[in-house]
Image 1 (cartoon, rainbow, N blue to C red):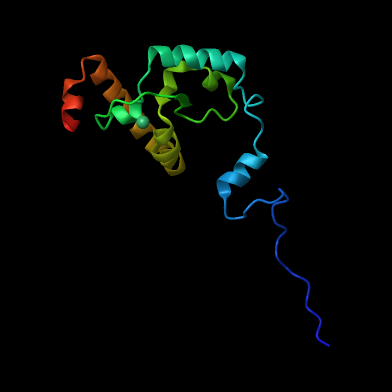
Image 2 (tube, rainbow, N blue to C red; image 1 turned 30 degrees about the vertical axis):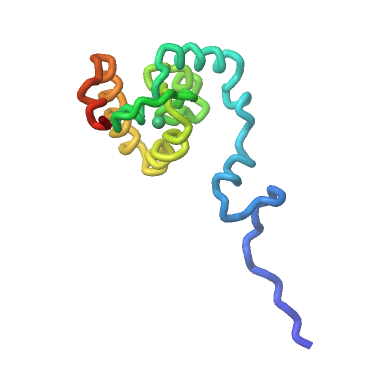
Length: 140
Ligand SMILES: [Zn+2]
């Protein structure tokens, strides 16, 4: 009777009941908790203060759309570096759909894409601060 040879496949992720094709789910399963990554009470207070000062999504602004921001994004990944984490000059108020869509696409494409995106959103922010009439005319 033929015997099935042992599998030569690499062991799979040990995280229980996760779909192997879902890279984001795997990433989240192995990531430290948000509190351990620095998103503590100090962060929650700082983000609320920032959102009170910058209530609109800057990525939406680049398209002439006025939409409320719901989160503060570290535009450039801080990777646990507390100096980068707390450097407000690269914080960006975003709506959830911009954060989870185009912003993540920029992160996937890398540093140059993030730098180009940062240039666009800060230009839009500065134009809105100056009245933004040229931006808003795009969607009338
Ligand atoms: Zn947005």
